[in-house]
Image (cartoon, rainbow, N blue to C red; front, side):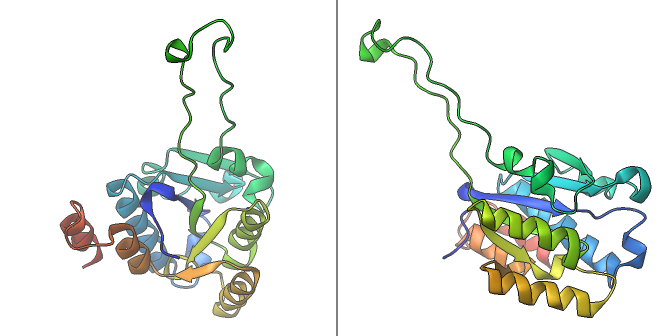
Length: 200
């Protein structure tokens, strides 16, 4: 199955100021996350962020925060326990008007957003907050794509163990370029040149 931008949302997990210097390839991982968020913005894919205990670990990189619709502050390692699921799948609005009192052509139509069930997720640490959040999203019946080149941990071993476990649980492991070109689908897409410029 390919990613569809109209069905996708991007979640960026804990790219925090005091955490990133300890992360393996931290600067490269943040650069990939920023590239991914910019591509998502071009493709009109909603971007959400999380921060683990920001009073201790600081906020996410400001350029990443600026691209997020909302950044969720959390103390649990898995962000779904703190409300991420509700952000990604808002409650449906109740029907308006009395169906019996108005003819069908005068009834208000229900304003419902198209449900975006494909969650593209990246972050740190891969074996803790990213892993637990992604597993919880899978349990909540979201489809989960983990962007491997935008994830890391303090050690490569922990990062790789997270990828193994996520793949075994049903998450798709992808790269930033895989996500970009699946969202585009064609060199004729209106955003192709803009996305290509971000990848080069």
